[in-house]
Length: 206
Image (cartoon, rainbow, N blue to C red; front, side, top):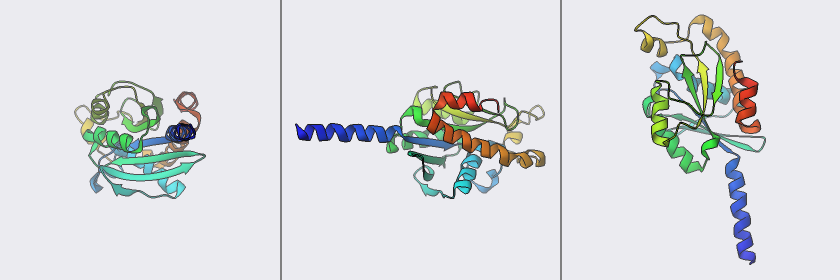
């Protein structure tokens, strides 16, 4: 009886711990030529978080990983090394390895349909033609996962979308980027501490 109770207690404790663990994924492409490009805003957000909170990433299987603890929550940050179009492979691996529930996954991605710097948190949706999200949907076999869309606007000429997305931020955008990155950090913390619905109410459209 005591052995059974001990096993039950430990199981509940483990489940409680797992519920306080979050996988925060920034999408992007590896390689110096992709640094500071609009498509790499997911990497940019996580790098800004690491710099602000003074932690660092280390290279691990399928990506660069960092762990950060804040107010009883454990944040596992992932920058996949699979390139954007195969992001789902890395996400599925680390969700499984760290036993993170799908509801505690947050994927940070660029969005052409939002004005520059605008942020929108959603709990589900289509891939919107984004190859990274398309692969995540394929690997996880669901469209119901949390995604943090960071607006990069669509101010490009016809036929120049790829050049625009893989291009560097303009001087004007770059001058405003740090404030938007600070807001992004606040959103991520709120997601873990206050839940997705409260965070959507507080941050969407700001």
